[in-house]
Length: 267
Ligand code: TA6
Image 1 (spheres, protein in one colour):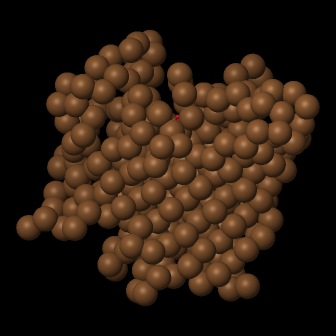
Image 2 (cartoon, rainbow, N blue to C red; image 1 turned 45 degrees about the vertical axis):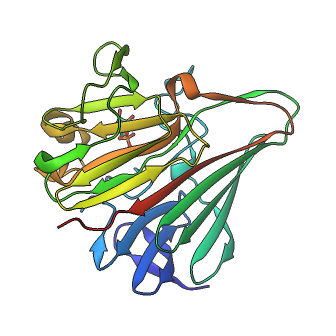
């Protein structure tokens, strides 16, 4: 098994497809890097807070998204991203990792090709129905936030978590000139960043997509985002969040998938 040391994420698996590569840390089943056509497609912080997950890549938010629904002492975005997962498969271009949490068994599959595909499959091995929310919390790298547009959400409804969780309707492109933290009732979105672009697709497994940029003040409060780093990242997160949170019956299995598909560079 080809494992090497990442300077911030610790031991990581390397996946490759031609000159492209992806890095997956068994700690958190955390995709911490993806290079496509010689470019870093995912943003990662240059610093890491002690005892906190590395900010960036594709953190796994599971088995709850956001604050714990009833217990404020629990970590935000669940336990998966801070847990050691078992590596159960590793080929040149793919990896599978597994974690058990109570009656829930979860498997993460990552594969690299012309696109990056990440799937999170949860099985309820218990005898009770379990509430389940999650997100594949993808931090996309962008050249300049002022040029970024999310171009296919016009008319989509969303929850604005920064404005009393009010339900609103998107008017035109999503642009970033302030903190944005919204749960869109869609299954996919396309981000354009100047001549580049990427399509984030839940391939029918999700009906909620979180769009987040912390902007200046929130970034400063986070402690692991350098000054100005907010200008080089946008999160487009395929999720089970808001109205799309799930309830998993005994014996049931549900899968949340995100496919990240680079668009041909437009000149
Ligand atoms: O997905 C957006 C969000 O829920 C934001 O509200 C912000 O909290 C972000 O996730 C990062 O959360 P973290 O716990 O990783 O700092």
